[in-house]
Image (cartoon, rainbow, N blue to C red; front, side, top):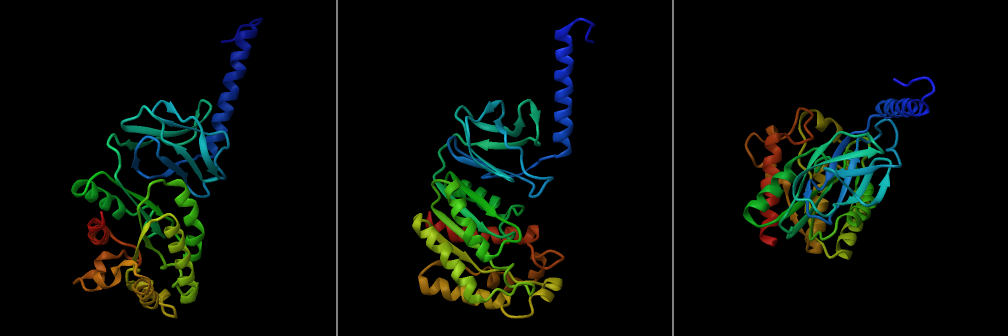
Length: 306
C-alpha cells in the first residue's frame, strides 16, 4: 500500500490504475484471432493474423505480434481486421501466436506450426465460404500432399459471402501477401447465382477472366472448380437465371476454351448415391463427409501436377 509522503508508492498506484483502466477498455473491445493464414509455414514467410470481422471496431493501431516470446520486428501491413507479419527467425515446431498492446494481451493465443523443412509446393485455395475460412477440406489436401508428395502448403484464402467481382478485387492483395505460390484453385460463384443477386453470367466470366489474368501475371497454374449442387432450402434461392447449372456450364466452357485445368465438383457429387449427405441442412455448405469427398477430388487434380 502507498504510504503518505511516499511519491514512489503513489506513482506505482497511479500506474496500476492506468493499467487496470487500459485492461478494462481493451476487454470491453475483445479482439480474437479468427484465423491465421497459412496455418503452418517456414521462417521468413508472411502470416496474416485476422480478427473476427466487425468485432467491436477496428484492431488497435499499436499492435505487437508475438510468436511464443519472440516479437516480430515490424508489421508489414495492417487494416481494421488483419495484421500481416513476417515469421521471425529462431522458431521451430509449434509456437503460440498472440496480439499485444504494450503489456496488455488483446487476443486469444493460438498454436502455429513453424516448419523446419523447406516447403517445396505452395497451393492457394481461393474463393467464398465453400473454400473457407472455416472449411477444412484444404487442411485435408495439405495433409495428403505432405504425406504422399512432399513438403507442401495449402493456403486457405476463402472469404464468406464473397461474389465473383469481389474476389477479382481481393485476389491481388492476397497474392501480395503469399510468396512462392505455384498453383491456385478457385471455387467461387455460389453467391452470385442466388436469386437475391442473379449476377449475369457474362459479368461473372469477366470477373473470372480478371482472376486468371492476375494468376498468369504471377506465373501461377490455375485450376477451376464448378460449384457444388444445392438441395432442400437452398434450391428455393436458386430458381431464376443464372442458376448454379448455368454458371457451371459457362465455367466449363471457359476452362475448355482457354486450356485451363478444371474439376467438375458438381457432376462428381451428383453421381454419388445419397449425395445429399454431402451438404448441410441448408443445402449449400459441405458437411464433413462432403469436405472429405471434395478434398479427395482436389488432391487427385493437384498431385499429378507436382
